Length: 417
Image (cartoon, rainbow, N blue to C red; front, side, top):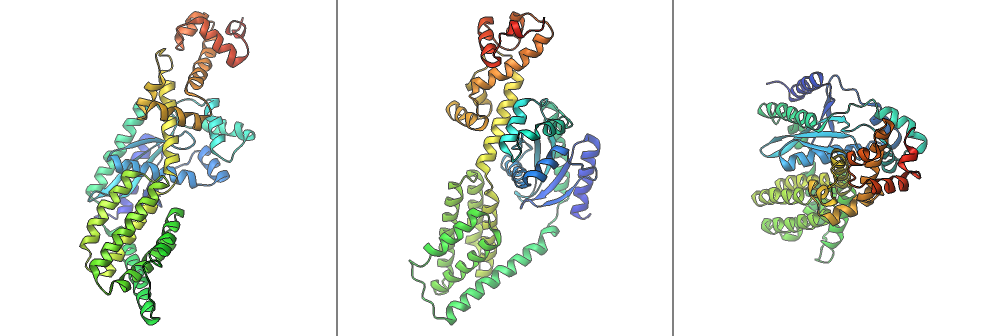
């Protein structure tokens, strides 16, 4: 069987050369594995990463990967800057090993609102508006139907890869981590025995648990692993070699960690999925080294869940709402509740986060889209009544009032003579 990296590179090349869409693959820890041979990052993304760093972009890729894993199908999402990507998971035995990312593209032509939103979300300022517009205008604009088929095509390729998938790529790294964790546990036990330490219940878990939770929340992987294995050594030493107690205390520790990462916005379903998976494995562990390996993977999974996911979810949701509004603004019955239902939120919560993310109420944004479109019609000498009806206003006089409020001039005076 071919080396997995070669297989996936071939799949990415097939996809990207045939669709003219960039593609790349990440492992479950969000490390880039490879890109298609034709990969050529658009100038906007390069500009953003150069000026503001890669962190938001990497977090967005991981968000898409985890959502694809959760739903078990391609996930189309908006990055924090309004570009569209799609992810498909590569799993083995129900666990995600890698995820492929396709994109980025735009679903609509560039407008002022998008540029203003990008500046708000980034370290850029108004002096960069010209460059932003120029770079964005060079990105492919693709409709939602083609985007959906592009994501399904990527899924077909991922299924073919999964049919030929093996464990070789993870074996060496897993072995290294297993040995390192076991060494730390043993080192802690010997230290406690040699120094006649007597850890009472108040000293542990409060001190060490809180230290571990703090490091996990910060996403400090290596430091968290180190503290975890020291805790395991303390538990083992305190238990008097009763392994049932060690496993029980380990489960208590994982519950505390789960609660803490949910509190700071980690995805609830992802965390519960990790708990269910690893609790079963904890109960099956036969010795302290095996338990260390299981808990290290558990901890790794928690850290993967923490990366401003609540904020990313909101941005993805709002851009989906904006896309829906742009596709349906001409419908004079388009209500906030319709858009909220489309993105799967209650009207009140959607209204709140829409205002927080865009700086505009739903009605203000809807009017903005309608009036910008109306100006294009007015340039082509349509009547005011026809323009009002075309952009979703039933009442011409109401259209005129909204237009004057937003533009400072009536549509009749604005309209070219």
